[in-house]
Image 1 (cartoon, rainbow, N blue to C red):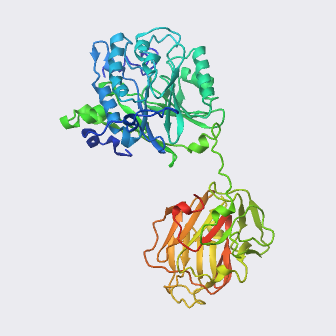
Image 2 (image 1 turned 60 degrees about the vertical axis):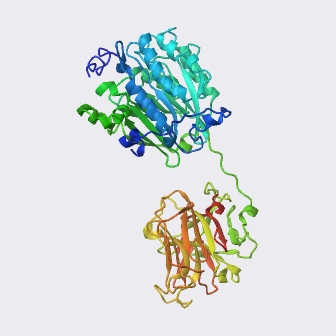
Image 3 (image 1 turned 90 degrees about the horizontal axis):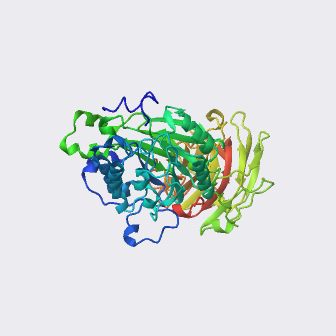
Amino acid sequence: MCTSHDHPQGEAAQAGAGRRGLLRATALLGAAAATGLALPAGAEAAPASARARRPDPGSRRFTLAVMPDTQYLFDGPSIDKAPVEASLRHLLEHGREENLVFLSHLGDLTQNGAQAECAAIGEAFGLLERRGVGYSVLAGNHDVKSSSDDQRGPTPYLDTFGPRRFKGKPTFGGASADGYNTYHLFRAAGREWMVLALDWRLSDQGYAWAKDVLAAHPRTPVILTTHELVVSEDQLSDYGQQLWDRLIADHDQIFLTLNGHYWPAARATRKNAAGHDVHLHLTNYQNRYFGGAAMIRLYRFDLDRGVIDVETVSPWILGRAKQGLNELERQEIELSGDADRFSVEIDFADRFSGFDPVPARAARPVSRMLVPGTVAYWRFESPVAGTVRDLSGRGNDLALVTVGGGSLGWSADHHPDQPGHGSLEFQGFKSPLKGAYLRTVDGAPLNSATFEGGYTIEAFYRLPADWDPDHHAWSGIVGRTGTGGAAGKSGDDPDEPLATLSLSNDREPQWAMRPLNQQGIATNWGQETPLETWWHLAVVNDGRHTTLYVEGCPVVRNPKAPAVGIASVGLPWLLGGYEYAGRIDQILHGRLGDVRIVSRALPVTSFMNH
């Protein structure tokens, strides 16, 4: 942080001054096995003992730790390594459970950049090096002469934290010729990531070096760390704006930046030249009790949920809980303000698509989908022209039926994990009834099948933005015609069809059918499925019980009562249509992809979306 005459919230004015279980004080009081952090691509041939300490590079959940300005702990004769060492030990102890991949310090390690100060914090970071841990540091304006840039030459900071210190370390990628800028590579979520650690002030040579590093790793997402960038909520400093204009804006790989220097903590978001969000975060706690007590901020990445959960904590204060905390420590044990504990939503695949697009999954041949027991398989890779053939070869072909002058469209759109690349576009409307649907031809073997030994019914669907419950609810995706009354099933509503996989007015998938062993209707319910999203449904019966799956996940409302087979009166099955009292009552409004029916229970790993 610069002095008070440079900025209104300067150091002179301040100089006197969980989502998950990592933050619980009890977790700190017990010891856990120490672990190392991350490896770059290609660094796989380490001893078995080292491999056992590494994070899981394939897990889609991982944590990046950040430590901002620690300068007041290393200030001339006032040197106290204990808070920094407590934070580093804490990370080592909990690295495995957190899948901790890297630590970044944001500069101003020391107050004066003196040899003794640098040496003291350098000793503290030796804790990480002895465990093979990946970390980065960078120079802040208190570690070096603040009026200089990265061409300043030798300094005590560079003597302590120059490239020689990191050479040969697993995550170290390289450094600029001057030694003040470095980049680091680690593996997480099955891919390579970069931390680009930049000096307090970049020279023209520094900018050129950073651009060369990015160009040499064109498909790698980048977290940029520097000392100064965001100055306050949604505002960049003058130098931060320069850094944005000269480097960040034109490099889509940079999706997150982290800086210290100013306080209080704040955030900003900017659109880069590619039109993508870049999240820019200021974290600094030197103005708080005990110079911030070496607080750490934890960035918990969860690629499946599309989120980074952020928390801020002082392990040193947490670790003192047994001794009894003083009043100021109790206020600082964990920070919960909006700038200290928050979540950032990121669709990582979409965000990275500009520089590292995920290749589309190729269509799979029909033969791979014909698992033993397949009785019907339909896919729609071209518009319907006449009969839709059953690709299982069992003769369960489909005929087109139009209502009220409706038609059936086609789209190349499909679920990303769908075997066939195409879908039918149903355009149903309730009142007056209009649209088109498909039905199995008369005499199709499927019409009389009762599936006593079990079954699996799968379908892909997507509802459009204009889907309206008043006009489109309770349309069928797949169903069997014939009423309960016609089958001699008197329980519940006798006019309901014998089986239907439908969508409720809340877009909840529902499997409602009459088993052979029941008079009434057995029903499985899924949760609301959002619009403009492809979904995979699977109904699986093992001969006694039925389970509905959404995207391969079992839903909560799966009945426990025995359900054997599906009642039949020998009438056709429908795709995109729903009958009530023996007459078509509703037609699907949405897209329908591949549909498969198998005469046995399939495991999730055999579903079409695997």
